[in-house]
Length: 171
Image 1 (cartoon, helix red, strand yellow):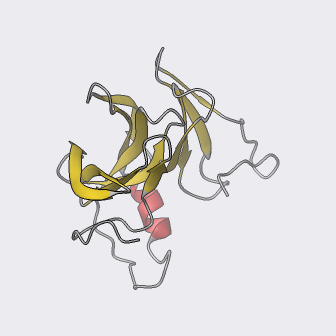
Image 2 (cartoon, one colour):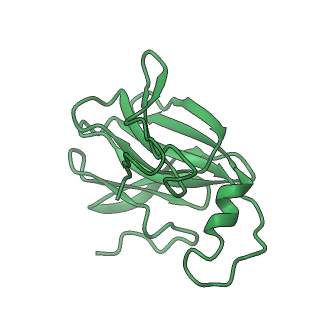
Image 3 (cartoon, helix red, strand yellow):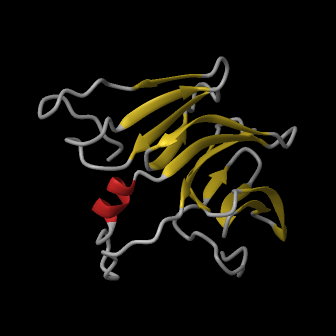
């Protein structure tokens, strides 16, 4: 069932909140939701100018939505083929910020940020204060999976990776 025909919808980035029968998605830089019964989309949050949304996850209780926003940078190696500019994106080290939006009080909270490319993002199904996020890039260059705790604000690697030995990724 098609719920919207808006322009700029990230087709691979929608997320279902089964507890409220709602779909969350980004249209351009704006986080929106729409009921599975139809109706008008609701706007909730807009990423800053010059950034794009990356990853989207809703908590099992339906209250929280987590995502990252990543700096939009030009590429010289983009050919139209999938992943053609991936290495260039990694080495540009775009600024990224991990966010958690509270759908009850409408507050957005920045959990962590740095010069690293974040995608994807996933809220723990058991604890909505725990958000996993991934540094994009090959294992030999980046520590892939990270955990952020919203309260208190803490960040740590899920598994400390030793080059060419231990590896942990979202795949």
